Amino acid sequence: MANQKLENLLNLALEVEEAIREKSGQLGVGFSGKTRNWELIVKYNGNIGRLQSGVVKVEELIAGYAVVTLPEPLIDTFTQLEEVEFVEKPKRLYFSTMAGKQASCIFPVTVRPPYLTGKGVLVAVIDSGDGVMEMP
Image (cartoon, rainbow, N blue to C red; front, side, top):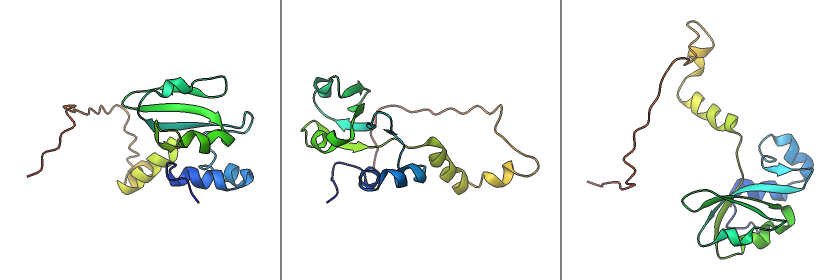
């Protein structure tokens, strides 16, 4: 049965043979065949830094997230820890941006005249940071 604390894509990556994982282009992202370790994104609570060891590497980020590197056989044990809320594998940015470009119809203007590239365009995101959404 799939581990409920693992994202579906990570569950799939752990279930398939390594040869299939390597061929997919997405399932093997975050896995090092040389060290047999996974680099994973973890949503946690409490003190995840206590897990730092010679085998498990923890890089705490912000807002209850960390990047954890650990051997594949330890993933199930790791997810059973109370501090661990959810675990996902990193994604290739290329695949993430491709879907957005297709949905926004950017491809047609980049492959024919006037061959728009976005070079020289400045984009800003302004956020109040309060995280509160008002409902009417």
